[in-house]
Image (tube, rainbow over all chains, first blue to last red; front, side, top):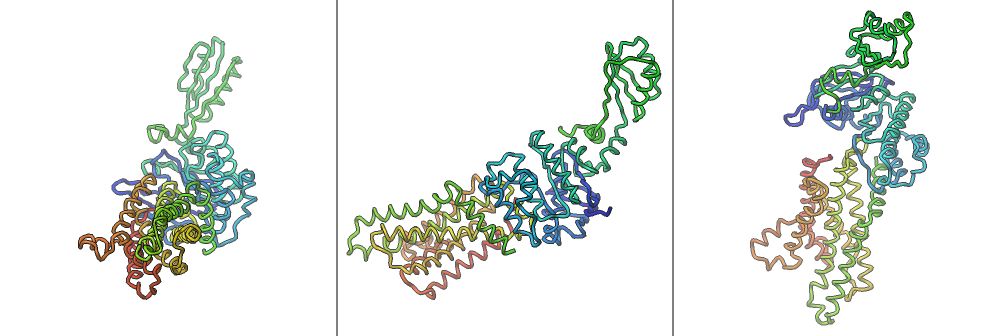
Length: 305
Length: 249
């Protein structure tokens, strides 16, 4: 696994506002890498510096061995880009857009008809852009990002504004891009999206990267808390639960108990305790922290604030 | 890269023709106005007055031509600002297509549009215009295309400064239409008071009008080298300025 994107010490300011400050990371070949953070954190600016659409003030960027500023046209030949909130000509037809994009690249483009089929747009070939739904527009933008068979695909807030069903369909498509052996670099402010899609994520806030790892490792590192919620009428239960080594707090409401502790072993210990003491339960749930909790822990606020 | 430019030009033409008001407004209205005004004035004309009536013989066709050019430029200003606001320009830039090619495609579409409108107007004139057309039409078309091309560069400059697409048309019209007033179409340059004359001399449209009037009357190109040079200068200056201030997003 060698890095296809290398970013080191990048800084970008707009007037007196620092949008991106000393950002460094690498994206490996064939992975889905996510830059996650709230709106205005510097995700899009970072991505656009890497795509060659913006010039950085400081730092070094290399994409496929090219400098996105100096070799911008060479780079554009080899990457595919989906921009946040982009539009096309209102009355351009779907097939015309794909055909136009195919003509912009030096190398032979993919078969546009097949691509539209794969993205579920075959029956929209002759539709005007303005008549497409949000999900269809995003699928068309994915088609345009893939038409030149790029080595790296950039997706900026791909599913923002889509309904949950379209969102899931788009996630499937993005996994499909990785399966074709492409590297995917995406930004999102949806933690669920990052968790489900990304091999690795970098959390960015106020233009700085605060941590970077696989979603599972980030959760393990920052949020080791585990919670078990169960219901039982056993009179000895409370006492038994308090004896569980990893149980830090046990709270009770009627027949429902909430057991909190740290580490993956807490759940095993609770189950062990139940079976050893033959405690009959009528409900059993675990609550595991996710990236959302990691974000809250690292920044002190929710990503939606 | 030429392949991309050609394709973009073709698609922009199709997209423009699909616009409900696009083709009708930009092509239809100047032709209609020309025919109506021509009929109204023509009804009062006699063969004797024709020779002395410079406006119906030269002024009106040139005015119509200038209006064609300006409506093409306003349409360009509007489209560029809409494309910028919608992120279409930015999306096209995220390809190997050179930025100049994106703008060139729009210029070509507008020049085609100008030529098509003029062609329709000539056809309408043959049928409805009272005096018939004896002007060198091919050369006049070339003169109009050169004028439009030069004014289009002003359009790019206007497109760079308009804050939002909503203001594009009014701001463009506010800058361009008053130029007609001092261009020498209504008041001959020679009889203008000195301050107005000075204004007329710095207004690019004056040179377009002078060129168009001259070519319509049958002047040789060599008699209008000054006008051509002025229009070329306008193009160079406005293009250089736009290159500095043009905003893609």
